[in-house]
Amino acid sequence: MAGVRKRGELIRQYILEHVAANPDNIAVQAAQHFGITRQAINKHLKRLVEQGALSTEGTSRNKRYRLHKTFSFLQTYELSQNLQEDIVWIRDVAPHLASLPTNVLDIWNYGFTEIFNNAIDHSGGQKILIELTKNPKGAEIVIADDGEGIFQKIQRSLNLLDERHAVLELSKGKLTTDPINHSGQGIFFSSRLFDSFIILSGNVFFSHHYEKAEDWIMERTVPKEGTFVSMRLRNNTARTCKKIFDQYSAPLEEDYGFIKTVVPVRLVQYGNEFLVSRSQAKRLLARVDRFKVVVLDFDKIDAIGQAFSDEVFRVFHNRNPEIQLYAINAKDEVKKMILRAGGSVTLQD
Image 1 (tube, rainbow, N blue to C red):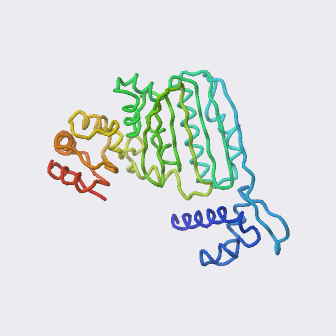
Image 2: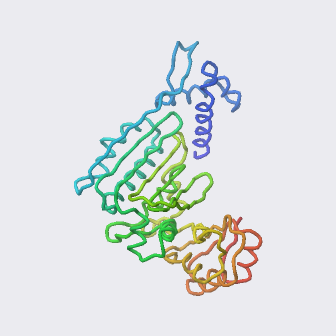
Image 3: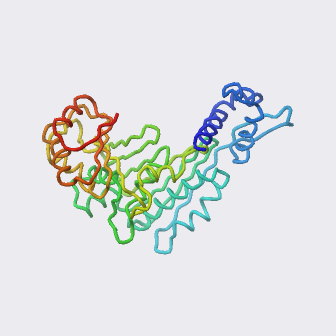
């Protein structure tokens, strides 16, 4: 079933990318490209029209298809105890996305309500802005507040080194400054549900891209107040909330089965520094003992030092033998140092 949804996504994306140049003959072109019948393509065209992605002109024999115009929505709200994310979603946002497939709407529902609620409960600001932009290919929602700033608040509340350190902790999941009322899962899963997920706050820019499965962190010289979050998603993605949740979960576990984390090791680095010290390793491993499966992603890491490797792959394992430790995307020099440290770790490409 997942393969069928994925193929449907590819067909509809192809139509949307080529219809402008071929409005009269897009059904024939798509049928030839995918090796299927025009009747099968017509079902996808009908679906895109129902979603509002395409409009039509002419009769059935001479029908022409055009991309629908871009829609935008902008609204500012006063942050108060009376503001409720589910009401804003149902009343102001969901109607503009209602024509999208159920799985896509579910992702938007989850991401919007989690990020909007985070601003209500944690920002300490006065106002919150929503901007929704939707075109035939995809949609983007921006949520921005004028509060303290998410990274600065995490740094202050947890006494972390700086805002970059806050991003590292946030990327692991199960992080919240209010553990009584929040599980710390919302931003972690939201960042992995969307094609593109961006947070800009203080002097730090953080982004996660689904297709590349990677996190990026950059700094700006002039920090600004508040938090800016951007979420982008294709209108016809085959992705589902369940698929993403299952990647990090186990059935019938506590905490909704959230047992696995993937930690981008490069977020520990500052500039061009090398990963050589035990203090860097301890920063990498902080709070990962809350998970049963820990995947360390060494993408773009050329080398690690002996002390760093020993702390991660021998000392940590000896203290936490019940945790399954994996290392992925490690280059040959990194693998050699990992194996030299001993301990129990599974290397994966």
